[in-house]
Length: 288
Length: 290
Ligand SMILES: Nc1ncnc2c1ncn2[C@@H]1O[C@H](COP(=O)(O)OP(=O)(O)OP(=O)(O)O)[C@@H](O)[C@H]1O
Ligand SMILES: [Mg+2]
Image (cartoon, rainbow over all chains, first blue to last red; front, side, top):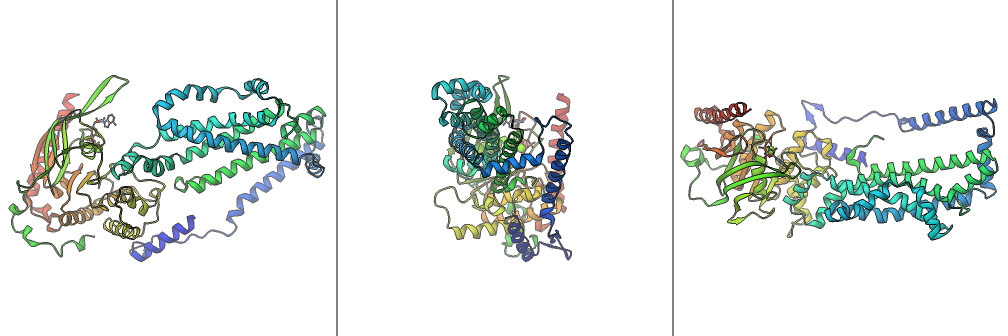
């Protein structure tokens, strides 16, 4: 997208002659190596390889009790056999689908309510005590109550994810609307926007990056909520359940295998959001 | 830009200084009647008076330049005409009606550009045409955008985003956006503040040419006395806060001034000197007050 934009501008500038000052070009072609995009990937691969090798060496030397610190090869093997024997697969699927459903529900509630709170002083005044209380209350505190209400089922696990993720999303959307540059609002008024157009053309685009960083925080909080629900909710499913069981059985490779999967899962989600952020807000020129 | 200006203009205006004077029988468009304006600070429970008792009549097709020290209420005044701000006392009328909000008859160039960062240059200019009813067809919009960008010398940057432009270029996008609808009244808050001296002069010439054709009414805030005298039919000098109108100076220089090299005329120097001394009193007054 960036490249098409630049070339279009360049071509037009050439045409107008604006590109030529005293016979020297203003827009020049960049010489970028074909391998430049892979540079970071290569560095990351080398970096991880070194890290895992060091891990293996330390584990083999048994500097730490192998009960707490298994070899990385054993950990990878646990992942492999776990998937092969159908131990990990269903639990991973359970967790991921719960998290995604929870995030979608959170966004569906959090974004409109947050936008509304940002735009209406009355709504803000009436709702904000509850929103702030819920934003700062540690999620774990809610578990006993939720179990009391909903029992140990999946419903309770989903609820805790939504309760974790929805408030950061809400608060960020609200902050976004409140910080809309007043002179952009004036420009909107001068050039005749009605309130619907004002929302669609100015307030929402301005707020979009805030929405995305809200969702980012929502992902982080939602993951915590998901684990809390699975560890303490006693539902007998999900990665949290795997962790719990591996701990009970002193199965260190499985424990580490699950932690590794959780790390991969959260990094993947955060990367996805960063990619999305660059797609929807190219004007912000984010560092890649 | 400047080179296209001189060709097809009626030469009568050059004949005598008298011809360029504002004829007093032209109808008034904007009337400020003993306007006082200010801003409330609810926390401190105070009210800052930015302008006090300002009365001014602006005639149709007139070019009024406003000069005054920083913070004297120039933007406040223009914001009231735009309809962002209501007078605390007095009335502001446009076309005989008290100003209630913005209108299609008035466009504004903002001191801080106020471009939409997520829109390209051409889409920013287009923004002026796409919101109100009876909007022009897509093809006509595109044509007018191209024309407006040509006027401000930004052809070739249609697809660029504001963050890819220099400050002066952004300001010119803001000017194109205000010109594109050809509104009856142009409100310009330091429109050439961020461009260099040479570009500025070229744009002034271009602008003088455009206005002489469209006969738009222009309220033009500037910090440059030269610019005020070069462009204005009259120059309103505003005093320090709370701003009052210190004097409205008639600029009896023949047009076109930028083409006609009015800068070297003795009358130009005189007017400039006069406004300078008015402002100097203000600057000194501000120091003594401290
Ligand atoms: N939104 C606002 N809230 C409170 N006070 C304001 C606001 N806008 C302006 N003022 C005050 O009103 C006074 C006049 O401001 P204004 O912006 O009209 O000045 P100005 O003549 O345009 O100055 P400059 O040449 O620096 O742009 C200033 O003292 C400023 O502090
Ligand atoms: Mg100002």
